[in-house]
Amino acid sequence: MIHFILHDARDTVAVVVVEGVQAGQPLNGWIMDDDRTITLQARQDIPIGHKIALADLAEGDAAIKYGIAIGKVVKPIAAGEHAHVHNIKTQRW
Image (cartoon, rainbow, N blue to C red):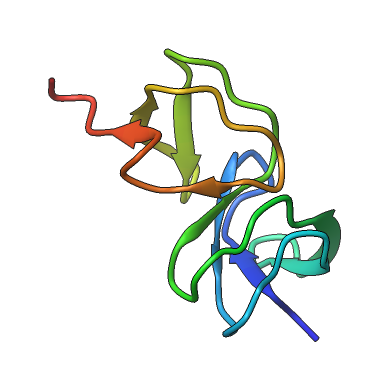
């Protein structure tokens, strides 16, 4: 079963595509561009459609999705944690 999807192997966040992801759950992800899978353990509950961090991200890092920066990390995020508006903001401000 695939739990999250990313486009580019360099992405640092991916989209959860199933309901009910819970902390501690082992997850499978599909890298679309490479047509391969990766594994990751969820550290927090993550709703469907929200992002999961694929790597540890420090404050000031760019969150990468689709191979491009989509925002700036404003609070450290560990791999497997929920990545959303509480810890990523637009790079405009």
